[in-house]
Length: 277
Image (cartoon, rainbow, N blue to C red; front, side, top):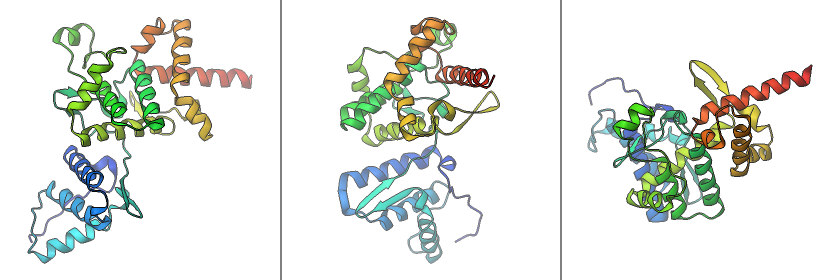
């Protein structure tokens, strides 16, 4: 096999869109066929996919290729977790590697264009799914976050990339989700669930400045959970609506999530300064 340097990803942020789609399809095989696949089967197939996506063709008769795949498979513990017969795909990045599904577009990387109302609606659906896991909640979540592109008029006048989210049209959201492949729906869920987790602990770069919202959620697990549940988000919406900083409560819902979070963080530090005085 011709020698050349190949950059193999070793973090989630280094995966490409093609990598993510293939990983989701591999995971779906595991879900569909139960214990038919071993951890070695999964990591080996993943290694082949990662190599294929970087220009290395399948060469089952080439010993060097087989060794390369085997060695790469041993390094993929950051992707797959095995516990007994259960093999799980561990998702950890806020980059959206599934930007488009069919004719629908999803959020920008790091949730840059998610509206506050859209976020709190999605969090509510996510909580319902965690309490009662079923396909309906996953389909609605996918149909909410992935919507048709905005009309040319909306793009020009309202600076919208996607058609506005709708609080009421439950059936339309569910229908979009039902038309997606199961691996696509799970991929959307995995991205949003991790985004919610990262929002409470991670660092975002906004207008060239690093911002961490962790202080808003406290240090304890219970504080983090209460800080991100639907009830707290409704309270935030009404409180900001009463202050008029973004307009009415309805206007708050149509304000980018990151703008709302920055306002909350600013108020938090202002309160801390007053307390010190």
